[in-house]
Length: 212
Image (cartoon, rainbow, N blue to C red):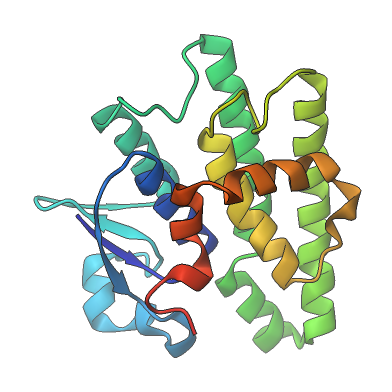
């Protein structure tokens, strides 16, 4: 498998976590968003949406991290990222969707570049924008895990799930945008538990070949 990704991309980060948790090997091909390599004709031919990540599985290429991770879950079920119970699976998907649908999309690079270039937002305004939506999402995420009572060391239970693959990269982004994380001790504890695992360590932005 070949993974087209950018070291600091949250969607790339979550997919690296999922691949690592499942013990899958993959070749990384860097697409440098800072140099706008994702807009070049060569990459547009690979991913017409001009986004990362893209996973080349040999006979086809998969795009959109939620779809790729769901494919991985079905194709490689031996290390599941979802619990076995129907309601529990819905709960974990809900946690992931808070990040994947309601926080990350409005804080990703193309949105922030539009705010900078079209609306004249400076870095303080960008940080405030991102902090607004991260805070809203983390408040909801935290409330849902708190409502479950005894939950183990991770977002759901005693092993990492899809929810953690989404949460940890967003916490990384929160730090980058100077969001004060002390408001969410439970999320910080989950992040610490995940960060102690090799699958998460190898997925960190700073551990990637293109990190700079």
